[in-house]
Image 1 (cartoon, rainbow, N blue to C red):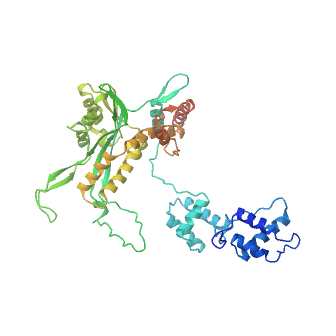
Image 2 (image 1 turned 180 degrees about the vertical axis):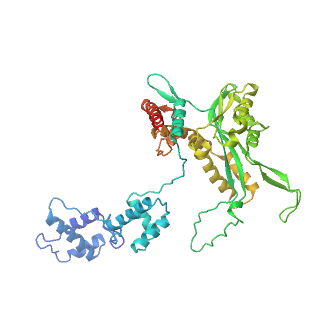
Image 3 (image 1 turned 90 degrees about the vertical axis):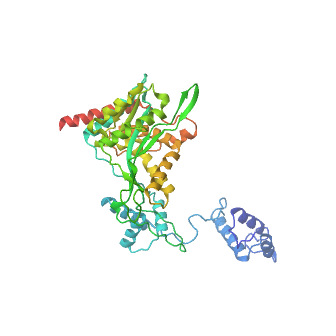
Length: 459
């Protein structure tokens, strides 16, 4: 044992003390002639280490004969004194409260700069992040949400109540929406406005992606159609549907009418198709469109009622689109109906809820630095095709957690979404979607509707 290379453990100290006391006078604490060197050789320690250990033992033995603690004092007592004093902690809280008061969301860098400017310090980012973690400060994302009127809150709650069925004996459950298809559009941009770079001091900063103007960034509108992954029986065997119905592009390639410095005349050029009532309706009823894809993917569900859920945007609902598409959805013995989701409720559509965000991230990873429309279309389509089915299953289960949260907060959208055990149920092979509705929660929904309705009457 070499004390110069490592700290002495409690066991090592007691061994030294026990052996040294064999040669020490009980009163004077002096060693017999030549005995001290024998102790040093026995444990391979120097004279200062031996004196320190024996002094520690003697002092603690004098204080209490029956409670001598030689355990190393490392945690909290080693190294330099911490700069994280009570004053520093209070200063961090003050800056945090200042940002809340001004409703100013700042990044870690901006927070640290604000702190250093106010208190004349020069605290590094990593140090400040350690201080924040020590006082339990966490960073969470906040998003813009639609403002809801009383009528819209009532409509959201009534939609929830309409999904709840009474199974007897005060048992309530959500209707299983496994035959509900969610539809929505999203712009996907060729380039990203912001990228995160991690560079070493010796790394060369990559050249920035350049554009003429932000308003002229090439982009493509996609229409996503997704359902719920599930097992079904066909021809006497159990088969599986992955939940993905189709991804449609509002655009087409057409030959260029004139030549330019970038292309020759006749070169295929991508042209956007504006989302209008006519183009939206055409996207559903054309050969290879949404209705045909639903019938192709859900061929085994012809005898079931299938609902297409979309928002109330004017191109979706104008010029009688909903009854027209529903009528075409009933051709050939099918029962496909288009229904509108509650107003100001993107949290009721799986695409807006989380599917589009993860699809965008995956498409960016596939596309990388390419900034042309063909690469963008190919990347988004590949990201859609490769989207994990397990994740889509969790999205379906998350929808019911959202429904319960909407009821809890009285039809609003400012609910906190707590951990619900979806992933644990999935990993353990249980039913992923929890359809149970506590009886008290059902009563709460009815009470909220009555309370909000009374407020309208009062006004």
